[in-house]
Amino acid sequence: MPTLIKFLSPDGLQPATYTANSLAEAAQYEPDDGIYTVANTFNMFQTLKLNAHLDRMEDSAQRANIPLQLDRGTLKAALRAMIAEANFGDVRFRVTVPKATPDTFILSIEPFKPLAPEIIAQGVRCITAANSARHNPAAKTTDWMHARTALANAMPPGIYDTFLLDENGMILEGLGANFYAILDGELRTAGEGVLFGIAQQIVLEIAPPILPVRREAVSVSQIAHFSEAFLTSSSRGIVPVIEIDGIRIGAGVPGEKTLTLLEAYQAWVKAHLEDL
Image 1 (cartoon, one colour):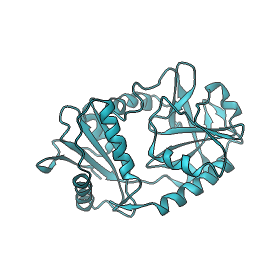
Image 2 (spheres, one colour; image 1 turned 90 degrees about the vertical axis):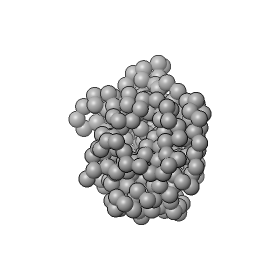
Image 3 (cartoon, one colour; image 1 turned 120 degrees about the horizontal axis):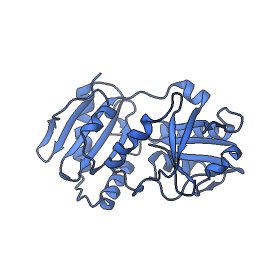
Image 4 (spheres, helix red, strand yellow; image 1 turned 30 degrees about the horizontal axis):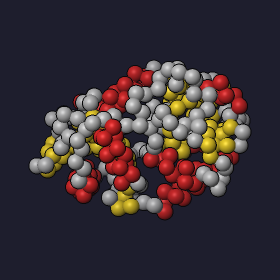
């Protein structure tokens, strides 16, 4: 099923000058110099923390020196119109703002495919990449959207994500996700050098009653000592990680605390959906 892509300018919605079959394929037509965000809908016209996504876009624009003028009402109306036109049901959408034309938004939507239940039940295997920390990680910029493609294409079969390491071997984040480890009874996640995720905001809210949280990265040398690990992103929520670099995490199955956090996360989502 093709992706619906349109340009939103001060003159309204216009058809894009290219076509693609997915958001990933459409990315090749988007500029290296810009900012973006990706989210998905629930019940067709509901979203989760969309204003937080847009807050982060404004922050990214400031960091990237892009003079963004964001009319949230107009943007949301355009997304609603595209979702109705496409009639995909729930969608995953990307909003991109090129630096060269900051008054024109590229809106791309594709059908949303939720995680397969077996991914949660079985967990995923991941690898790390040395000295791969992003430049200007606090900004969600399109140059990283393109650069991470090489790392994604280099992943062996059966590997779900690659975690970026700084020069000291500290685990920072995934290619499009935040990373967490449970070490010595604490939930650990990098407090700097990463893009702070929207799903991460939820985790940091729900986690303290379940276990202590420390905003500090863990080292790749500590992997064998993790009792549990997981990653998060807006469109996937919490994904258990059972192996990193061939090293089994805990018992090699999704851990008890991870599953408790997942249950709390899903309850939070259900209670906080908003109409687009």
